[in-house]
Length: 148
Picture 1 (cartoon, rainbow, N blue to C red):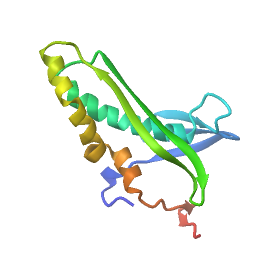
Picture 2 (picture 1 turned 180 degrees about the vertical axis):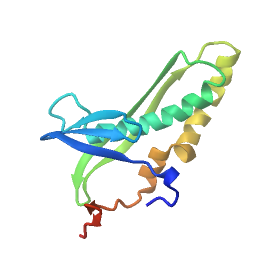
Picture 3 (picture 1 turned 135 degrees about the horizontal axis):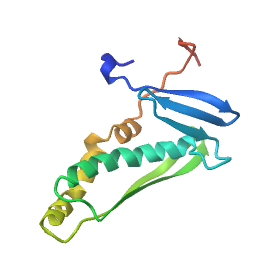
């Protein structure tokens, strides 16, 4: 795992009922995850939200130094398929809708918005970079590796 414990990120998951789970972060924040039978976010929807949220934070922090946005939204989507590689998403798209006031700060923010989206995609967003670089996920049962 992580060499420096300060760099370790952890979320625990507890079953609430069949198909419904409570995820808890180390700060005590929680979110309910479901199978899609109700309005809880599914794991795939959380992945899309994480992709959008990670880049949105980057873009917001860069652009809002210059101006508060008039509109700021991001939509992440992908197509779920099942093939010889198993279930997965393809054709991932992160689409921003951002606008700023027509004043000096707004023009400065507008001038850097595309660059900030590119920086987030290429370097800053941990979630997007992790998805795109495709690291292996190790699995364990009670701390003991599960072999395949």
